[in-house]
Length: 233
Image 1 (cartoon, rainbow, N blue to C red):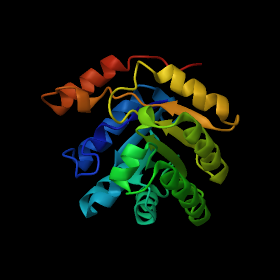
Image 2 (tube, rainbow, N blue to C red):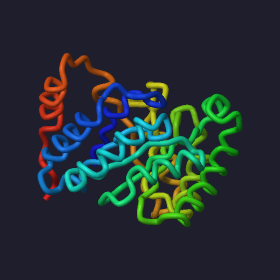
Image 3 (cartoon, rainbow, N blue to C red):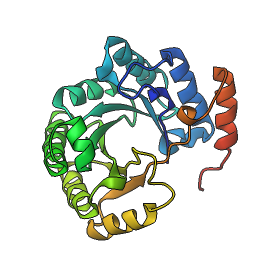
C-alpha cells in the first residue's frame, strides 16, 4: 500500500497545494495502479482542523477523487479534530482518518503535555468514541516518534487500539533517524508482543516534502517514475 501525503505538506499548517491540484495528484497517483488504485493508494488529502479552507480542500478531494484512491484526512488525537476529519471524508468510498498520537515521552511532552502512556491510553478511548459515532470511516493510528518510544508500550497499546476498532497502526519516523537503521529490530519487538489482528505499517518519507520540484507537472512526472511498479496479481 502506498501512503501518499504530499498534499499534507503543511503538516499542522495550511498547505500551499490547492484543492484542484490535490484532486489531480490523487487521480494521477491512483491511475498508476489502474482499477486497483483504491486498494493500493491511501491519499492523505490534508489536515481539516487547520482552518475552513483546509477542511473544504479535503472535502473536495474526497468527493472528486473517489474511486481513484482511498481518501484520508489527518488529525491530532483530539475529539474535535477527529470529528472534523471524519466529516471531511464521510461518504467517500474507502474513506479513512489517520489520528496522530505521540508514542515517546519526548514527543508526548511537546504535543499533549502528558506522558506517552497517558497519551496512548487517551487514544484508545478516543478510538472507541469515534467508532461508536461513525463506523463507516476507517480509523488509523499514527504512533509519532516511534524510533524513540518504548517497544513494549507501543505493542500493548497497538493491541488495545486494534481491539477498540482502529485499523492500521503506523510506526512513524518523526525525527528522521528510524529508517533504514534500527527499523527491523523495533518492528520485530513490537510485532512479537502484538496479537495477530494488529496490522502494523512503516513510515518512510520520500515524496514532495523531500524533493525539489519546480512545477506541479514536474512532480507528477517524478511520481510516475518512482512508482512505476505493477500491482500484485
